[in-house]
Length: 80
Image (tube, rainbow, N blue to C red; front, side, top):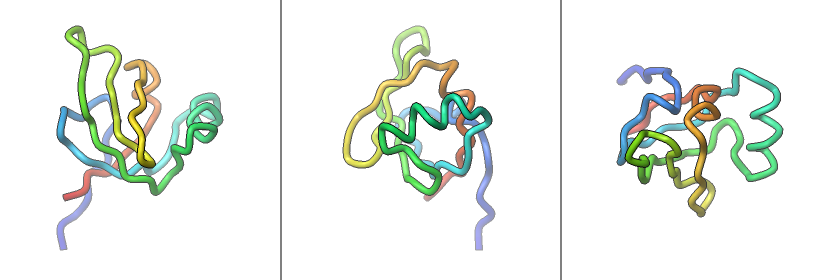
């Protein structure tokens, strides 16, 4: 069995898929929870803006844009 690697959402590149593990701040957790982003949800990086901010992710059946400083508070594990 392959070991999953934990990293920050801000470290992923377009096309990479991951599963949300946790949030490092309560503030971002409440904001994302309202949008349906919860630990356990699978996400995919769709697009990164030219200056790396914002990023677009696919989650829970829709596309969401996040600022890079928000993505730095989201711990994910990679999925194959």
